[in-house]
Amino acid sequence: DYASSCSLNKRIAQFLTYFRIVLPDLYFEDEEVDMNEWVSSWLQYLLARELPLQCTLRLWDVYFSQPDFMDFHPFVCLALLSHLRETLEDLEQSEIRTMLLRLPDVDIPQIINQAFNFRIVINASYK
Image 1 (cartoon, rainbow, N blue to C red):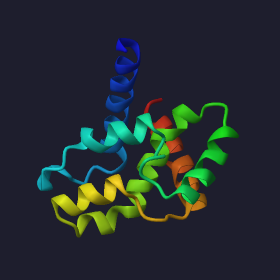
Image 2 (image 1 turned 45 degrees about the vertical axis):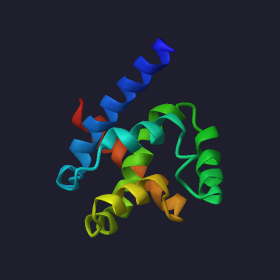
Image 3 (image 1 turned 30 degrees about the horizontal axis):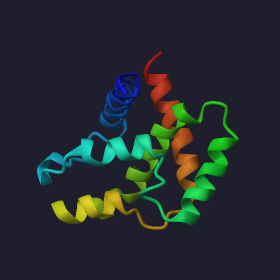
Image 4 (image 1 turned 90 degrees about the vertical axis):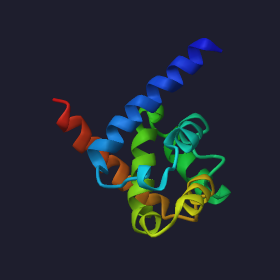
C-alpha cells in the first residue's frame, strides 16, 4: 500500500545517505549494479531472504532484544557491506548482484559490533 511504500522509500533514501557517509569509496555504479534492486529487499525483509538461516536467527535474536531494531537495521546492512567490501570490490556485475542477494555466512557478533560503531559515527555526524 501507499503508506508502506512511502515508508520504504524513506528508509531507502536514509540508508543511501548513510552508505555515502560510511562507505563513500565502495562504488557499485562502476559495475552498473542497481542499488535499489537489493537495498529494498535488505530493508524490507530484514535480510531474511539474503542471509543463511542460522545468521538470520542470530541477527533477529539481537533485533528482538532492541527497542529500536528498525532504526538499527540500516547500520547492520552497512556493517555487512563493510565486512564484505574486499570481496565485493573484486567481483564483476553479475557476481556482485548474486552475492548481495545470497549473502555468505558471516560473523553476526562482529557485524553487530560494527553496526553499533557505525550508528555512533553517523549520529555524531548529525549533531
